Amino acid sequence: MFRSAATDTQMSKTRKAISLISGGLDSMLATRLILDQGVHVEGINFYTGFCVEGHTHAIRRQDRERPKRNNALWVAEQLGIKLHMIEVIEEYKQVVINPQHGYGANLNPCMDCKGFMVRKAREWMEAHDFDFIITGEVVGQRPMSQRRDTMPVIARESGAGDRLLRPLCARLLPATLAETEGWVDRERLLGLNGRSRKPQIALAQAYGMDDYAQPAGGCCFLSNEQYSHKLNDLWQARGDRDYELDDIMLLKVGRHLRPRPYFKLIIGREEGENKYLEGYRHTYTHLHALSHTGPLALLDGKADENDLHLAARLVARFGQGRDATTVSMSITPPGQDSRTLEVTPMPSGEIPQSWYL
Amino acid sequence: MAEYTLDARNMLCPLPVIRTQNRLRSLTKGDRLTVTCTDPGALHDIPAWCRIHGYPVIESHREGDEIIIRIGVSTVE
Image (cartoon, rainbow over all chains, first blue to last red):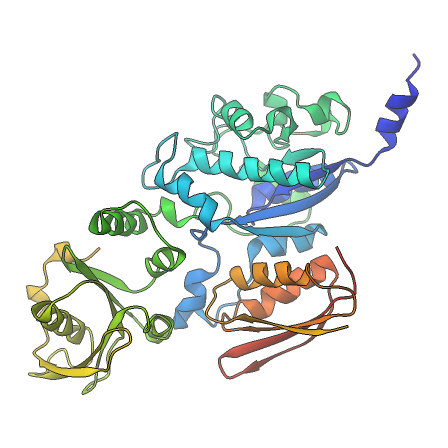
């Protein structure tokens, strides 16, 4: 059988794939499988503002001594590939606020999120003359976005179509362009399915990978029940399902208490959080004790004189003066001078549990 | 050859890395970029990004709560 010259040219051209790198094991393995087939692979990683990666560790003093690394960068370095990190904070809002496929157990829009990221990867692929997209998805691993029936939906809605290859479960899915064109050998791809991590861990061992981020899940604050509750509270209080980056960052920090529908307090829990909250002193009314050691607190919303007094009593309760008869509290609205209120700290028994978000 | 600065203070990773990446890509061979950050993670992550993409880190050090990283542009992606 003769091959055409065109086919020979195609065969000799090094194909290029862009791989969605989360920093977890699956995308690392998927990429490695394709690198092993002689394909040029580069990584892509999207920053939505909800990524767990690094943030709370950077803020909280008690976590600062732990060795830190961005897992996506680390994975790319281990694999010897470039990693393009893309900020998608503004565009991602529509995914969070109005997901076409709805939410998971919390405010996690997993289907829309995966479709969004594959679409962004597809746009990058087209702009940079790459040939196909790789993800670390496994059939049946996630209840929404990684099911046999939803995987084609993501391929279709992202516009990636048959240029989307899932190397870890490709043998269970229809052949994609990379396979039918011979850019990769389908026989050397895998047919993993289900929630078990054992095959991935075994493959990692076979590759000599003994250090990788804990696999599957936990990478997005939106899948966290408490975080989702706080985001819902923010939307309800403002009467608008919208947010800015600062809003969603602050939801990760401190104790959040809402004593009134129109204002809440964000109270630092330790030195690192107090220091982080200091960065917002010029945007929010802030409170702290003068007579005792205590936290810094931000007041988000509107508060009249009675509300400020209540806020001061609440914040005083979380400082060293909690058992004192009187605590001097400094209150500083943004752009205004500070003033002092003498308050009696609110006893913990008087704080309704419903105030805690 | 020119010297540039990037203020990434009060940003949490990966934003300092992303801003550094985007700034470096706007520079030309021979330029140098000095990034100032406050997230301690940047001390690891920015050099990691530079290694992956072939940008030499000339020096990095702490000044109080701030981290200063100086990067050269020896390649243009």
